Amino acid sequence: MDGEEGQTFIQVAEKATQSAKFADLNVPVSGLYLLAAPSTPAEVIDAVAERTEQGERVSLDEVKQMIASLKS
Image (cartoon, rainbow, N blue to C red; front, side):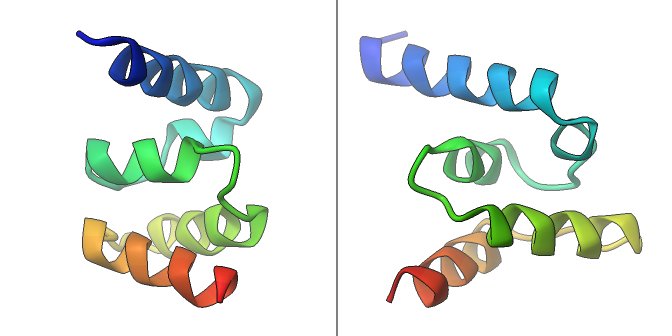
């Protein structure tokens, strides 16, 4: 594991301990990495959480699109 990958893993772990909502997301691991990034708007995490609470699985592409739409 390189330094950047290790840091990303730590960010995911920290988010999961800070928010039970984050720990229960039905998202691929790559999506969790994106959601854990400090630059990801909280609105994206909330939107993904809302969808997964309804039983949906949110794909990596959907996570990318949601982040891009709020950053643009």
